[in-house]
Image (cartoon, helix red, strand yellow):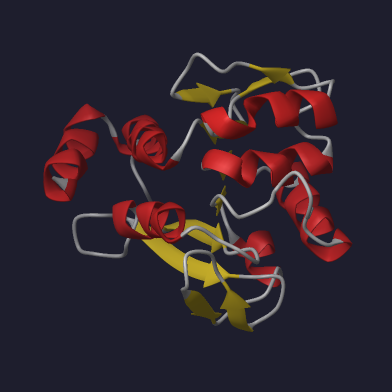
Length: 189
């Protein structure tokens, strides 16, 4: 697909964000001469976000970055079945989707998408440890625990961090073709 401008990627870092999950879309879509993407890392508000596994993130953008993005990645976060994102984040996700942005969850980021209602009636997956919790908490979501990722067009989900790489390469392949996806995959190795 010919690109007339940079594709805009937002990576939404929520409290308890998993480091690998955050790093995957930032690494795959990072701005470089061979990649027509611009990446912005954002949170519920600009500033420090306490992550998981002892790391924190300083994000330059708040949820307004979701209004700018063509695709929004929601990395996994700790305790997704107990701590949904706040209303401003959920509203920003829905607004981004309503104006045509794709939303892609890595691992437990699927809980944030489910909380918006955008996964209702659709297939989705999440980290294997949380598939039953996702199905119980959001019974309108058709949870598939036997896949690496699910592409429902405007909403995508992956089963875990490693399959988040597969999901990002799938998006890249759809945007730029097989050669670009293969080049990125080799770079990631």
